[in-house]
Image 1 (cartoon, helix red, strand yellow):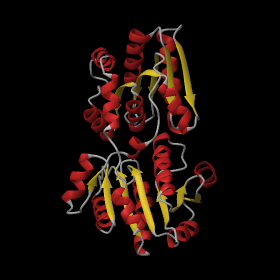
Image 2 (spheres, helix red, strand yellow; image 1 turned 30 degrees about the vertical axis):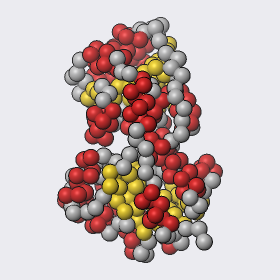
Image 3 (cartoon, rainbow, N blue to C red; image 1 turned 45 degrees about the vertical axis):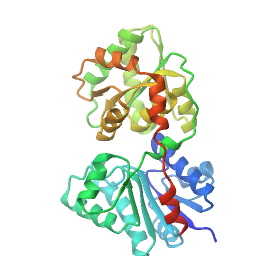
Image 4 (cartoon, rainbow, N blue to C red; image 1 turned 90 degrees about the vertical axis):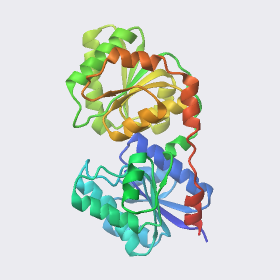
Length: 339
């Protein structure tokens, strides 16, 4: 009889990176012959798109039912167990894990970034949850060191989106810009970025990507206005509300991508698009150092001209080689799920 697996994460919010992770997980679960169910903010859309059973994330009865009927809970990927976004978010994802553990279900912590955890009670709660998990995996060195310092066995794995099957980019000379709103976002950074783009790429088409409309679109439109003020003739276009595959197609046509979001940079690497990281989070810093791509901070104090020159000098083949070296190993996951 097939196993039943429930997937819990930041799903159903039309967030590009998380939906890409879910695509990889669901595709693999179907391949190994298990039944997949997804806890989602928009179960109707998730069910239709991924062809899986899906329940509403804040419907307690639905959550209880799907957990009771599962064999394994997969929590992740992404950065679920942190209290920077909000303590309520941490409480929610911890509750789902605790519910599965209460009913003696196997729990897999899947390729997560653990932390930051700024509250003592957050640390205590996450430590206890992970200590009772069947298998803990993290996607970055900092998370690995944190969990191991708690005396919990954990494996460092590649982000699952590295396993996403896409071809190489076509490099049509487009300059892509992916921005998101964040607490450290500021007009000075945007203006310096716009100024450098006009200096270097005024003759190129500039495509601006709002990966999550509710969070990104306002900033993207503000940035487009800045570009137009500096160079009224510059060709720009803002993209939003696209499917995951359509966003990937747009990025595949770029020669360069200046991006904030972790998975925007990861997709650029897989396509051989030359990226420049805008560091709003530690996970972006880690990826930039790992892939040896240029980075600017939210303070915008760096020499942007130098950063752009480094971006232009990147070797496309080395970017592809790096991305192809990050293969996701499913063997331990499959053993736990199928046993």
